[in-house]
Structure formats: structure tokens, C-alpha cells
Length: 245
Ligand SMILES: Nc1ncnc2c1ncn2[C@@H]1O[C@H](COP(=O)(O)OP(=O)(O)OP(=O)(O)O)[C@@H](O)[C@H]1O
Ligand SMILES: C[C@H](N)[C@H](N)CCCCCC(=O)O
Ligand SMILES: [Mg+2]
Image (cartoon, rainbow, N blue to C red; front, side, top):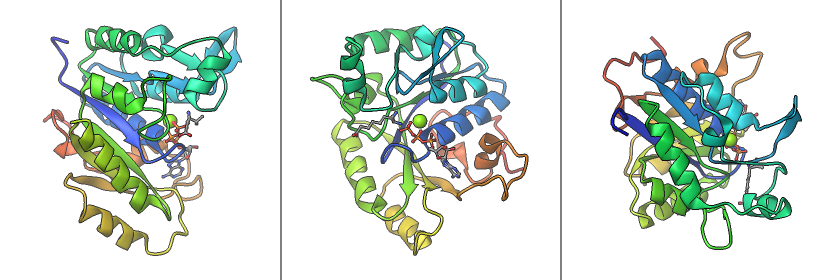
């Protein structure tokens, strides 16, 4: 913990809306500054067996942008096999997700890294077991939250509910990102404006829907950073150069 300069909890308005993409982009930008960076996906649901090891795509994506190599047992203490609600996936494997174990892993990670990005699972109140959910995990970690909004019809209410839940846990909403899920959405700019006028935290930027055609041969993690200005994040390293420059 002594060396830790910054750490963030990346939450989302839903599952499959870009948390991993934005968390990876954050890690990419932090790694560029020369910091020792680590990614954590404490609970993952959906894994495939390769060479006798269960792999989760999110955990692998974060690890690919981090400079500190962590054992899976620390970075992702719960690699669950089925791509379903984690408490259900865990129960079907005869496992129970335990918050104290996740917190102990996080503490060990902070001893090895200067910057840590933790990705949540699904939306903000996904159950982890019968007693606790992702919001409890975020609260116990006590990290500033970066909220990824999946920009599509319905996201206004999802976002405002999530912002309320973050505040109810006494957590700091450090910033939010609008990530385009539906590129055909009507009035997407007005939607972002409507959210911006209701959220008392900075908008890091709006990420368009990327495609192999729009950005041929490009690494998406670096492309995403061009649309985001991370500098308002608490603890953001002062030597970081905006990725668009
Ligand atoms: N702006 C974007 N442009 C193009 N593809 C995107 C964009 N954002 C996300 N995606 C794609 O959408 C899918 C879901 O994104 P991602 O895995 O980051 O979501 P998530 O919120 O982390 O999901 P989960 O709840 O499973 O962790 C991925 O295939 C990702 O590459
Ligand atoms: C499998 C998926 N991609 C996520 N990892 C888990 C999403 C759980 C959502 C649970 C829910 O809110 O209903
Ligand atoms: Mg993810």
C-alpha cells in the first residue's frame, strides 16, 4: 500500500457495456507513464479451459495492459465458469464468493503496484452471494469509482440509479465515461448532455462505436484513450501525456 499512487473501481450501468474496454484503456494510459500497474477483476463469470488453465477474457484483457504480472489467484480470485450471474455460477460450482478473501488479494496487489484498476462485474448491484453484492465490494475497497455508461436508449435511468447507489454507499464518483453501445441511437449527444447536467462528476469523454473498418489495424485500448481525458481523476499521474497527443 506504501507505494500506491492511484486506484480506481470501474463500474458500469449494465453488463456488456464497455467496462473492460475502458478499464483496459485506463491501465494502458497508466502503464505508459512508467508506473507499476495492475489490473484486478475480482469476480469473473465465463471462462474457457486452455492448456489446463481456466481463462477469463476480462482478466486477460486487463493483464495485457498492466506492467505487473500477477498470479490469477490474486488478480481474479473467483474465475467462475458459466457466463451468468456470479452468485449462481459460484453456487453451481459449489463455491461461495467471500468478500474478505477479495480484500486480502487486493491488499497484496497494492503492495506490488503503484496503480491498480479494479473492474466490477455486470452492473453496480450484482449479487456476489446471499448477503453481499458488487456495491458492498466497492464500498469495502473504498476506491473512487469510474462509471462507464453504456450509451443506448434506457441509459439515462440506469445511470441515475447507479449514481444514486454509488452515493448511498458513501463512495466518490470520480468521473464517468459515455461509451457508445448503440451507434444508431437517436439523440445520443442530447442524452449525454442530459446526463452531464445531472451528474456532479466530470465526464472523461464520449467513446464512439469502434470497428475494424473505422480504425483498421489499431489497438482499441489506445484508440479509446484519444476520446478520454483522464487528468481529472484523483491521483492521476502528473507526467501522463494525453493519448490523443
Ligand atoms: N466503443 C466500443 N466500440 C466497439 N466495441 C465496443 C465498444 N465498447 C465495448 N465494445 C465491445 O463490446 C463488448 C462488451 O464490452 P466489454 O467487454 O468491455 O463490456 P463489459 O461491461 O466489461 O462486460 P462484462 O459485464 O461482461 O464485464 C466487447 O466485445 C467490446 O469489445
Ligand atoms: C457473464 C457476464 N458477461 C458478466 N460477467 C456477469 C453479468 C451478471 C449480471 C447479473 C444481473 O445483473 O442480472
Ligand atoms: Mg468486463
